[in-house]
Length: 245
Image (cartoon, rainbow, N blue to C red):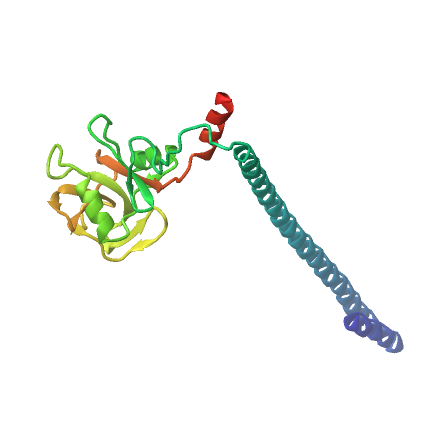
């Protein structure tokens, strides 16, 4: 508004000047007026765009939260149904047995491990990880010495001293930056050799606390998958109970 007022003042001043000089001043005033209109239009357009962007972002976030709420509600309803079904029985109609790990997996603390043996074809690091993901797991993340010793005790030497079992560690060997598949950074570890490739395997032939080797990710090896231990396969039991009634 201040700019528009200034321009109008200039126009009035121009009218009071001699005719010889009024035309250039009028042209300047008109140009300033047009520029002012364009500037105001741009400001209004930018304001509308920002308001729309904020609204769009909020709407997207609300949709995502609504979807998450719906999924949680469905899960809650399923669990409530399961509990109501179980409470109908004085004696649960199937054998009570807790299997924290699936068949072929080994329990250690709160995790289950699948260690691939000779019946399985060897795979690259990426192929090994994909195999783990297909089983709702991932390549093993070794978090401490006890877990390292457990892994070493459950793997076996095969083929030659260079082959081993892929673990969930990869990175850039020449600058010693290593990341686990869960996103955590590895700062030390149980290394035998950190050069030679960008993917890591544990080699049973080496000492228990010094058997990690960095190798080419395209090298074919066995691998180790890890998943969280399951206390109850509840839905499996419920379906068995429903069938047996």
